[in-house]
Amino acid sequence: MKRRNFLNKLFGSLLVASTFLSSCSNNDLNENIASGNRILKFNVSQTFDNNSNEGARSIIEKPDTVYQNFSDGTQIKAVIEQDGVINSRANTTYPVLTGTKVAAIVINESTNKIHRIQPLTVESNGSMSCEVPNDATVSIIFYSYNSIIDIPMVDQDNTIYKEVHGKDVMWFKTQPIQPTDTNLGYVKFRHLFSRAKVVMHDKRGIGISRFETTLEKSGSTFAMVDLIAGTIESQDHDKDISLNKDATSPTIDLESDYEVIIPNDAISTMKLSITNIDGRTLTDKYIILNKKLEQGYSYTINIYVDAPSNQIEDGPSIFYQWDAKAPWTQEGALPAYGQEEYFNTDKIASNSCKDCPTAEEIKKILTAGVYWDEHGPEWVDKIGRKSTRGLWIPKRSIWEKEVGTKTYAVANQILDEQRASGDYIFLPCAGAMSYLSSGYEPLSEPAAEAWYWSSEPSTSGGVYSPEHANCLFFTRVPQGNGDRAYADVKLKEAVPRKMGGSIWRAE
Image (cartoon, rainbow, N blue to C red; front, top):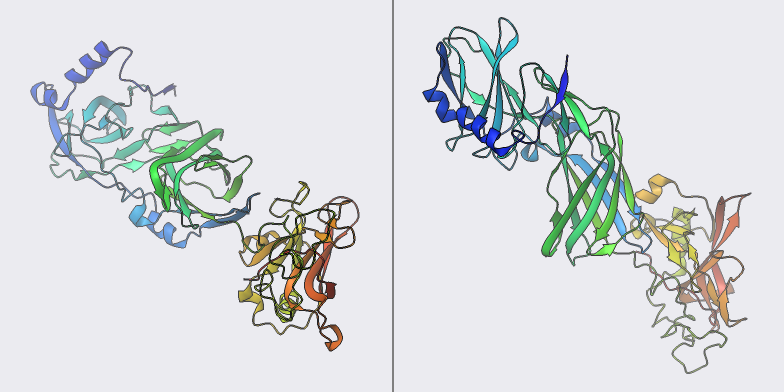
């Protein structure tokens, strides 16, 4: 069977196209009915036909959820899900427009051959008129690009056609129509391809006015359509799908238009690249979505953008002596008594450390379980070295009911499921300012250790010390070659208050 391309234009020239359409318009059919033919009028439904079992499928199909932390700490959650019946392609928010171009293929049921092909247009009253033979049982295939400009150019010698990406191909086939039939029902189109959109939700509360995303290699560049059966075959999966939106003002929920996608059964994993948010160019920011797009279905990719985790006050390159009013910034010199950078000698933290966890809370955190990560969110240390090493601690909702018994724990490499759960907070292995060298350490190896102050002074041995305080301390322990490691984590007591440590909160 021969195959040929559908054309995107009516004919090779406007003159030929105009002549063809005027001679085959709905009005002319009434005036120029061939001998032995009659006119059938069809009403066009303003909803679309469900794909097989779409409603039931939308209830049982689980959405795919992916979490990702970007280098600036911005947290992204992406959820791709099949639209429910209300927002499905069946109950679409747009109707079949007046002026929509449709190719009508009349098939003689007794010979199973194409009798004739007519170009039709949806009229203002939502109907189409088609000429059929008086004395034959026929079925009619209505084929459209859902366009008021482009019409499929089919001929009687081909029933398999190559359709390229970019067309919203619609198809409907009637039941056999007897010569005596008068109740013809509705033409209720079915979409042969899929579609998807992105909705970006701003959980920061400031609104988003622009985004650019791409589904890479997520659809086919073309499909072979079986005109009689209303089925498709797609071979390649090389098409990138751009899903962008540019609004005039910021909004909390910014939504792209739907884009048509030619689905391919071989594609079960998609890469969604996020290249721009509010004019900020993003490099190598992507999310992997495990989803196969089904023919005729509609999908929404919800992207939730959250603010960077604020558990580390001032970032991983700023350090304080215990409960000082200001950070220790001057290399080579210890803060002096009376300066705001100097540590507090009181029994109660009232400045930078007042919201840090207590010693008992640190015990609960260690008891609940902590995890090391060689490949966490990217951060930059005090001397400009990039790293992804750090410790994941559980959120308060997990550890607050624990009976804190541990003062030491081994933190093994975190699993993807734990990292993606949203139940943990990342603490960079940020180092410290040494009171011995009066400078930042360690210099020999980046991200080797970290000191996070407690809100309590040291009472080691039951004796209060105005010179010492408690902290959460962890150090990286390499395992063999490569980047395998774990961490030793402990509640460290009697740490000199003149040490420059990190300020944190345990939410």
